[in-house]
Length: 200
Image 1 (tube, one colour):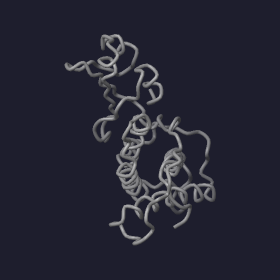
Image 2 (cartoon, rainbow, N blue to C red):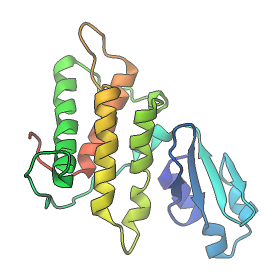
Image 3 (cartoon, helix red, strand yellow):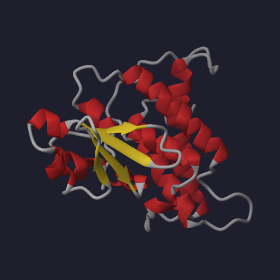
Image 4 (cartoon, rainbow, N blue to C red):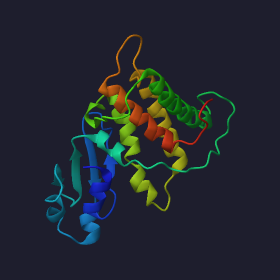
């Protein structure tokens, strides 16, 4: 299930937990907050178990499916441009946006298909790390204190790792594969969240 589908059943967005390196897990205290027996909600969600404290623990089989509903955010680009070093969080965030935008341009030039998104191929630990951070968006959107600035730095850092170690576009004579199309979709989601210029 996607975060939106889970939120519909729970009445609130679930909270991603852990690193998602091995499994994509959400937790929710929705049953306790709503005064509903946890077993009632758990029965409506595949991969859900009731913990001793009444929280629900939900394991999602295909974490990449959340890209079907990741919203683009219109956060202001207030980050400092200089210095352009990794010590500057503004550079980290803005460069993350520019890198994601570059992936979309390269994908068009290299013929990576935009159709046929297969979320299950986003199973590299770097892809999953980016998905884990993106999974926080629904909860942050309803939070009184979403903490966007540190969140955006975390997303940018996760994306930089993925960009460098899990390439979104084919190298050399390599033909475009489903994993490339999926990673281009991931780049599009990151571009829609991180503020910054299209080129840096």
